[in-house]
Image 1 (tube, rainbow, N blue to C red):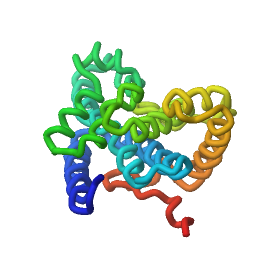
Image 2: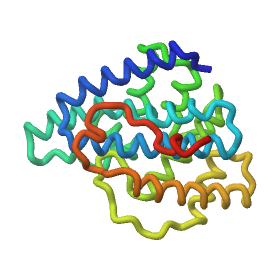
Image 3: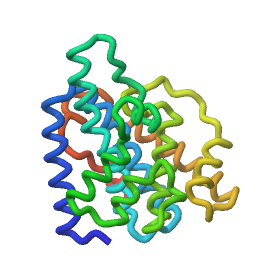
Image 4: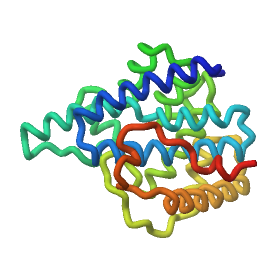
Length: 232
């Protein structure tokens, strides 16, 4: 479990990396990065509370950091884009295969390098590395599953690294339930259905609260979860 000083250290290191990358990547790309990470974090915490996960704020932090390995890759594509107009800089953020083909690695592996060098706790590191394969998690499968489910929930709605905010369409509940049960196998069909409905409501509420593209909203700082202001 993260104690206060460890949590603070993690956030300070993350802020330093974000600030460094922010000077080398277009502000639009940083905003898109935070759109995905912030929504994943907020939904991770909501899902964690709903399934009585003991450390829901850990789920928020893990969701916020799950794609941190994508930041160095964004720096590379940004530099490449300046040198060639033919470089594709959008859409690779959720395809590990495309990342490996282009970079020789993927954002999960890069996230692991960052987490190890910064001495992240094993369960947090695992959630960052295994959010595309949560059933391989051994340190804290529930945390990895929560982040994976929230991540895929956002991806299904077009909130993906390197992709602009989409025009939302009506979701398919059966797919959401299948994702939840795949990431959190302890859930039965009825529990997954109720959680999918809750996440959809929360997602739409978040979209309304957040002004994507507003100046400075995602430009540098680590965003907080707006749901907490409504919690008693």
